[in-house]
Structures are given as C-alpha cells and as structure tokens.
Length: 52
Image 1 (cartoon, rainbow, N blue to C red):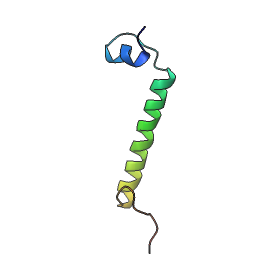
Image 2: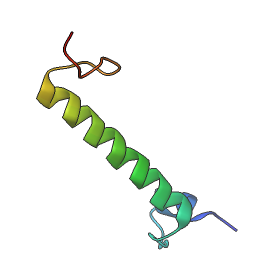
Image 3: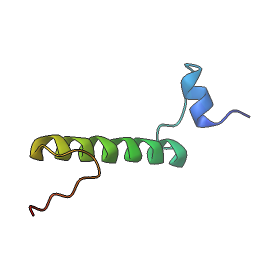
C-alpha cells in the first residue's frame, strides 16, 4: 500500500491530515517564518540578534 505522500505525489486522493505530511508542512512553515524573521531584522541565518 502506498503512503499518503506517495499518493499525493502521484496525483491520487490522499489524507492531508496524515501525520507525516503535517510534520513536513510544519517544518516548512517554521523554516519560512525563521527566514522571514531574519530578513526583517537584516540578519543572516545563524547570526545573533543581539547588538555588541
């Protein structure tokens, strides 16, 4: 049996609430949020937000 992700990629009906898919979406959203936050303060990923 195919996983929900395999069904999704194949263009078939799938369960969007599948835990694997939810985890991937959450990780992608957190990454996007963090990248946006870094862009707003003008920093680069990994740099401290504190001033010296």
